[in-house]
Length: 113
Length: 115
Image (tube, rainbow over all chains, first blue to last red; front, side, top):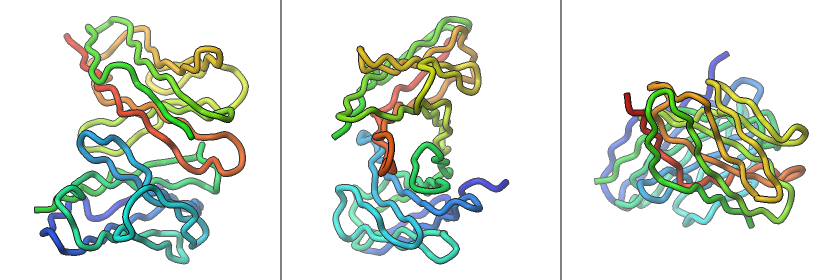
C-alpha cells in the first residue's frame, strides 16, 4: 500500500513569490492535514481538509490556503512568501475524522531566499 | 485548550542503556496520546498511541509508554537503546471522541545514542 506522498521534495522560492505544495493521501483516506515544522517552532497545525472542505485552520495568516480535490489529494498554497515561511511542510492523512489513524508523508522542504 | 511539554530537548544515552523520554500534557477532556519518531530529512512515523483501555501501550521497535492520568504523563521508554534509535521524538495529544481531528505536538526531544 502506498503511503502519503508529497511533492516536490524540495522547493526554493524568492520572497514575494507563491509556492504550491501537493499531497496524495493513502488510498481510502478522506482527511488530509497540513503541518508546518519550522526551526525552533516545532510542529504547528496549518489546515485540515475532509471530504473536499476546509474543516479547520490553525493560527496562520490567510496567505496560507489550500484545497482538497475530489480524489482527496490536496494542495497547499502559500502566497507572498516571507523568509520565515522557510520550513518543512508535512502532510498527513486519516481514514476519517478520527485522528488516531494519522499517517505522515516525508514532507516538502520550502526554502525562501 | 491542550498543550504538551517534553522535558529535555536533547537526551543522550549509551548503547544498551535505558531510554526514558518524558512527556506531560494538559487537556480539559480525556485525551488521546501519541509518540512519533522523526529521522533526519524524513516525515513522522507513529511509534505508539493511547486511546482507551490498557494504560501501558507497546509500540514498534521495542518502545512502550504508560498513560498516568494522575500525573498527566505519557513517558516513552525502551529497556535497551540501539544506535538506530537516534532520532527526534515527538509527543502529541488530541481530544478524544468527536472532533479529535487535530494533534498538538510537543517541541520534540532529540535522542543521541553513544556507542
